[in-house]
Image 1 (spheres, rainbow, N blue to C red):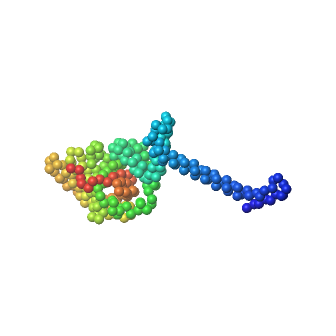
Image 2: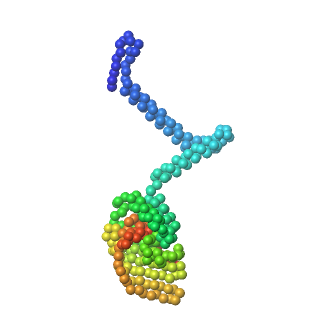
Length: 261
């Protein structure tokens, strides 16, 4: 604290407390700023309640003011909701919208495939590392999953109609994997496999396949051929993202336990 004492007889005689004055000025500015914020908050939260029921007392300006305050409050509420919303929810929504636009990947262009990969990468980047480990044995993975998007050429050939149902049932405790394609006319192609997992990678080996044609009461068994693996990139209560052995991207959402009748 710097003090300067002037002569007793001088008209400028004073005790100069310059830093103290600056501190007081700063405090006053802070208090004024908080008072203004408090006043604005009171207006936003209270004017609608006090003014709304008695518009006749305030003249013609009351209703516009009331509407303006309500608009500000709604805008503030919307902005706050956008700031606090998990960015993954928006990315998941965009992934499903793009999947729908491309008929689950059947009509996807090169640009749309690149856009989907970018959305998947963004979702992974927004997910904490701790939520991306050990997904192959995560209890949430053992359920039925409905296919929403794929780049796997062999599967896309079978999915021309939107009515074609493609599901995958994982049973980690039972070491089983079931892939089903069911067409609108009731014909089914079912593939059974064994399943094991380590980290995020799931390994499968085909046990057998059956082509069922209900119109002629025929269930044609086919020999099991092949094995492979896929990585679970993302998993939550209602979405699963895979990348399989050949680099294809696959999007699933949680389905109902039973098959379509």
